[in-house]
Length: 280
Image (cartoon, rainbow, N blue to C red; front, top):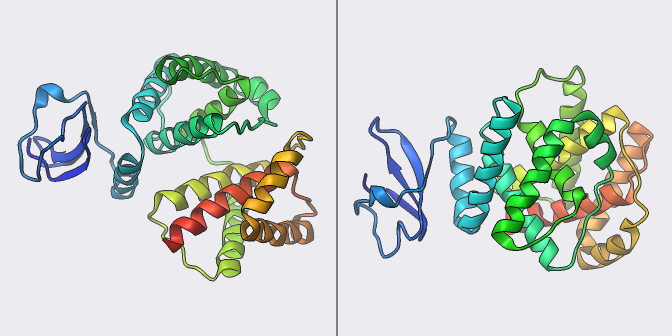
């Protein structure tokens, strides 16, 4: 195996024996290496081979930005989920879960704790996935010496649920339409064109998908504890919050729904990130 691309000291892209591009991970595997150099196959800890080019590109981009430890934990969680649930998981979970873990740990270290308003529903409707989420908290504590509460187990469970092979909801058209409507509002408000191949856009659309599903099902909740954090966020990300206010007006007029503080908070954070990444 020879290196065809270096993502960081611990991750490289190469070809397998069938000529298929693969991502290999291992401590220091690409340290002081150059493109074309051979890889020490004994140092490879993990090999990723994603079936779609789009997923492969997104995963490479994420690997270049996030430390190896987050992918190690994500891999443990995914393997545990597959073993205990006995279900196939969409390979996109390697992207979404690793990214979520990175964001969650950073928020925790910054003192930002987000409550999961859907926790009761997750426990009720997805008990097995919730148990996977609880096990994931142990993996996180082992790696990062951080103890999350059960709200985070619920967030992790949703990633597992979203990756399971399920029949499409009869409301999939309405969900897709809502995602398109909200993303169009953001695009017109900031006068930008999204890079739809980027990880930041993938994160944004993933959040909109969860939101739209809850909106269509009428399963949105209010969390009174979000007000203080929202007051901070709307000052820190003023323009993004103004965009959220436009979205709120649209949803009120077309869906007869007022955004909860929780959704204002999440939408502001995700819009700020996708717009910042698009403009840089």
